[in-house]
Structure formats: structure tokens, C-alpha cells
Length: 133
Image (cartoon, rainbow, N blue to C red):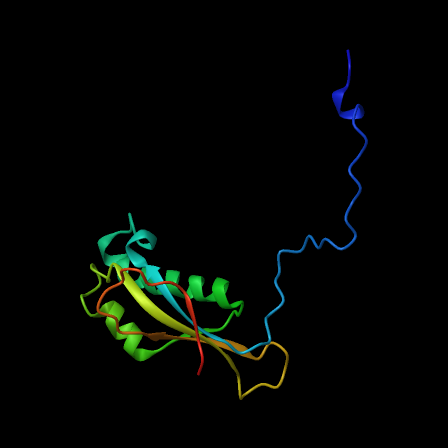
């Protein structure tokens, strides 16, 4: 019997590779516009959970895209998602995500993301854009 795992030399470990799944928060303040396909994110959710799930998925998206744990949703955006009731959130939504500095704390983790609604006529051909504020 031949053991195959001894045939090849071991792959050297990369000393600069970090196995931790935690990301460091980004410190630069930036604003981007995203189109989020909410219908895909709330698919197969119970009717009475669609709009709440849309809010949760929007927060998850913003957290991942901007690298901050604290995500705040603007009241206009919240009202737009809930405008058609709990069962029918909009299919797509254009969102402006802004990474901002928290005035309350002076620590390093003092960044938060503000999600705001961007009114558009059509979603055709829109891409992620960095906005100069």
C-alpha cells in the first residue's frame, strides 16, 4: 500500500497570511451608491417577515460593504421599504452608504455606516459609484 500524501513535499506556510476572519475597520471616510436587489434577498420568506427581513439584509449588506458593525438606516429609506406594507418590499432599491465618524466616541472603532435612499427613475445600467460629498 502506498500513502499518497507523503509523495509531495509539504507546502510552506505563508508567514504574512492571517487566518482570522475578523476584518479591521477601514478608517477612510467614503460614500458610495449601490443598487440592492431586495427581491433576491427576501425570496422564500414568509409574507409577514418580508419587510423586516429586507431591513436585516440591507444592514448585513452595508456591514459587509463598508466594514463597520454599526449601521444606521435613514427614516426615508425605512419608510420607502415599508411603503407597500409588510408583504411587498420594493424589488430593487438604490442606496447611498456613507462611512462616517462617530462624534460620541474617540476610539478606533468609532465609525458607523449611514444608509440613505437615492431616488431613481430606472435601475437600468446603474453601477456602484463613489460619490464625492
